[in-house]
Length: 192
View 1 (tube, helix red, strand yellow):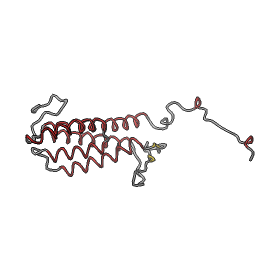
View 2: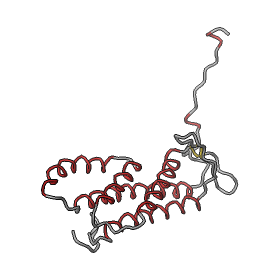
View 3: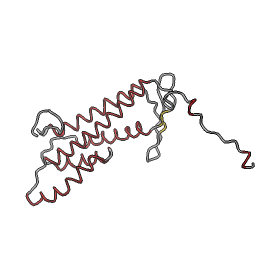
View 4: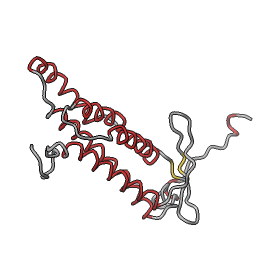
């Protein structure tokens, strides 16, 4: 084939359907997905605030204060920009290091948070294929372990994820408030 004989094409973008490439799903699907993703953002904010609260209320020996203070600002900065997995690890460390921590199921909570983080990656990074007749879609998503997600997702699935993540955020808040401290940024009860 000669170079001049090649037919070249471009997408006629003006002819694409409105809301391409999300046009095949109903608006309610995208609302459910958006609410689930938004709740993950809230969870990340809550984890960052919990890390702040736990580290700010932890007692230190006199000879540890200077070193702890030098580490505190970088830790708080990391809590602002760190991704969900890193926040979960930092939160777990902060809870374990706080001598007044009252949570007795920390390992279970951390495991649930890590499972949720996997779901967040699917919801945020999956490519949503055309829905079936019931409105369910099989997202194209492969994780770092080369595992392929093979479950169809519909609004009920997304709504359940949103409720579960909201519950996890409450569990994280409870790790602070159960010690008697007010959760940062709230007007709830507890010592500031």
